[in-house]
Length: 115
Length: 112
Image 1: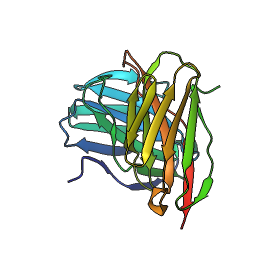
Image 2: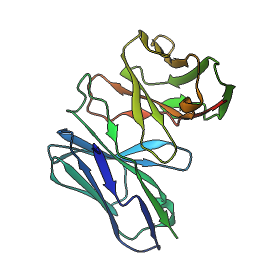
Image 3: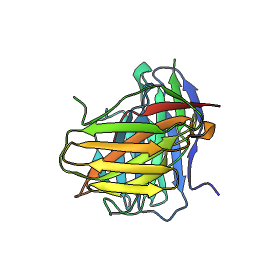
């Protein structure tokens, strides 16, 4: 049973295109996240949703728009893709936000390559 | 300067060695400290979780936090080839409004 699942696993596309990545969790968590991992393995938070409400929005270009239709899903839509968007995008979920014992559970990532 | 600094490695050790992985941080508000392990082409998975200063042991793994020095460590005893992965430290403040802040990860290779 996959706890946090992302689709697609790989995404190769050309500059200027629009693409979406989907994420679903079956852990019953109420907080979901998108992280970006660059080629040097540095994980950086992009967005966080709690009960479908946006609670964290780091300095991410407006071309990135998250959407949370319900607590179990958090999708990421990217407009006008650029070369610098190439990275691995991880979805994660946790129970609550900032609760004392609420570690993040990560999906296996979506490897985006923009050519 | 990044909030969390971690040597990227790679760190190569023989099987059975004791491994020491470290992170330093600058934000004194951090209270919760975690270590994640990430295998190639996989998402990070939680390995150890500690609150404030002190030690925590779980099998072959020991996590140490020294808040006075803003320094955390992960020790792996009797290292195995299956321990070969990237180890990321992560931390958050007590308020919890911010998401976890990660180090950039240390790549560990345990040679059989």
